[in-house]
Length: 195
Image 1: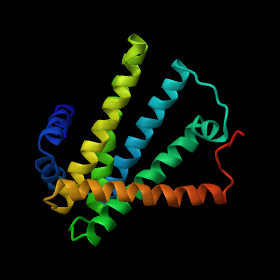
Image 2: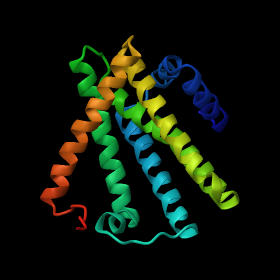
Image 3: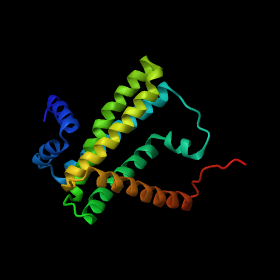
């Protein structure tokens, strides 16, 4: 697969997620290659986040910010979050009658993250050239993430109802957030409360 093919696949993913998923599945990547896609996405995202911090330093005033400003910690958190996302997409989708497996979910999560990394690179450049666009680009990135998460999950499992996938995604985010907050509390990572 060449760089031009990746651009075409990105456009196809945005226009027709089901067709893009068929192309991704048609590559017949072994599981180790799917893990490599995920690791590439994490590595590129972490490098861009580090570059962004160098170009636009922010104050580290709480334990969470300090933790996220460390590249290896950030990479570990991103990798853990993506693997957890792939597990949840596969398992929760199957609970609701979907037929996508973990290997395909891993590929979908990695591919979606690579697309978002491309947007992240554009964000860094635009923030350097036009700082006022930062908020707009952040909203665009979040909207693109939601669109891709819903449409690719729907395609992965063969669901027909976009509304049900949206509800499932929202419910999953709340459950995962609750579990992660319990884990964070167990490790003593709690937000500071001011009186």
